[in-house]
Every structure is written in structure tokens, then in C-alpha cells.
Length: 200
Image (cartoon, rainbow, N blue to C red; front, side):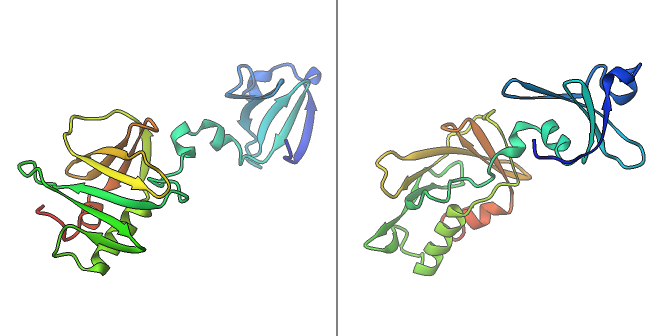
């Protein structure tokens, strides 16, 4: 670990590890065969006590919040990897009573749609919103019942990506079964994803 140790204490000179939050340790980090035990912070400097082997080090506390973070906080909030470029997208109606959908696709370098009312600029904007979609948060998958799906084909891929979604009063949630994740967007994003396409 390339973290500066501003002070060191040999544990043989300590009677009570509990006062350092090391008996038991608050957090443990294992790197290969090495164990690092994280204790409390020093009251004045706010540096963290960390035991490695027979020595307690006093270090800056930047790493501890990362160790305690939920695994989902390390995930990319982008709906797609930037290297995956949309080739076509099929969008359903948001009206539960309407089963029709539209298809937007790229042909000879130009975006086209089977919805005649959409202009080239509108189509490009819709595709851009999906291509650059960035969720407020990402959680492990726990899908709700829905019968609506978005189908996307990417360039240089023959397999479609099918994603179910759910619209609540406050959120637009997209479920990616392939990743085991669900992406939470503010409800306002619905207007950008489906703008001027189909009845709301």
C-alpha cells in the first residue's frame, strides 16, 4: 500500500487494543496474504489507526470510506459501455393500452424511423439520450412485474439487448438482466427517452 504512515506504534507496547478500535477491528482488508485491520480515528488529526502485522500505523483516512461503501457504489452508472454504439432501438408505447412500438435505426450513416412525424434532429436527440444515459443510482436486480421492453442492437453485434422497464411516480427504472442490475433515473428522463414519439 502506498499510503504515508505519519506515526507508528509497536503493539507490544500497548496494553489495550480496544482503545484504538482494533479489538475487534472495525474493518479488515486482505491483499493477497496480507491483512490490514482498520480501527478508530485519532481525535485531533482525524488520521486512522491501522494495524499491519505487529505495528499500528496512523494514516490519512481516504481509504476507509471506500472499504465500507456498498459494492454498487463502484459500478458505472452509464446504462451502456461507451464502446457499444447503438445501431437500432425499438421503443414501446408508454400507454398500457397501446401495444405498438417504433423502430429507430441507422442506415448508411443516417438515422431513420418508421414514425413519419419525427424529424432527423428529433431522432438524433432520442438516440443520443439513450446512448449517453446515466443513472442516478445502480442497484442489484430486483425486477417488478412489467410487460414493456426496450430492444437495442449495437454496431457489430447480432444479439439484441432487451431491457424491461418500470415507470413509478418518481422514477424510471431500467432492468438489465444480463448484468443483474437495475438503473434508476429521475422520472423526468422519460420525456427525453420517449420525447415526441408515442402517446404518454
